[in-house]
Length: 231
Ligand SMILES: [Mg+2]
Image 1: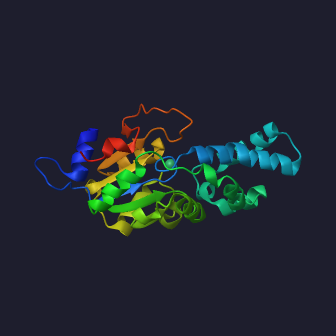
Image 2 (image 1 turned 90 degrees about the vertical axis):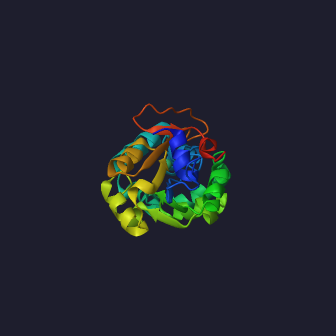
Image 3 (image 1 turned 180 degrees about the vertical axis):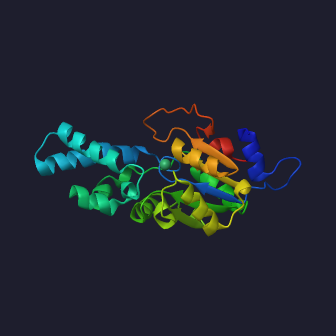
């Protein structure tokens, strides 16, 4: 599979006027929206706030908090902002609001979403994020109008890293695995979708605008959504 195969399956080619892909499932943070916001928030602003509250150094706050993150990584707690509000004694939604200006959409995302609508694809936001995080990000970016549905790991009962997520997503959305394109910036998640048999799985590189990432995995990747736009 190459990127031009994905484009043909999406938009059609010389032989086919329609691409056979019916459903396009898109991750939110890092894929559509610049992950710099989350990196700055969780790795800088949260430890800084915690340090101020407890009158400890930024270094020791970071140490304690990273240990907590690690403990809950890959679980539903990880993305549950109510859990973190309680665990850290910090009002997470209010703190996010303070840096809302850092929420930014990656280049060409809207162009791609507009083409998907034009070609009548089922467009699904597929995310481990908490519904409060989704509402916050959609309000800041105005991307919500492009989606037919939102499928979250809380709804599905397990994060996207697990097969159970894909079984429930297929039941909920009623797709044929082979006619689905899924894009995510997290390798583990993309692997899980590919392993389940999702027909087209791509990794989105450059999750954060401040970090250069490259993908050396067995899966195909894009640096920008411009690579998927029709001719
Ligand atoms: Mg992501």
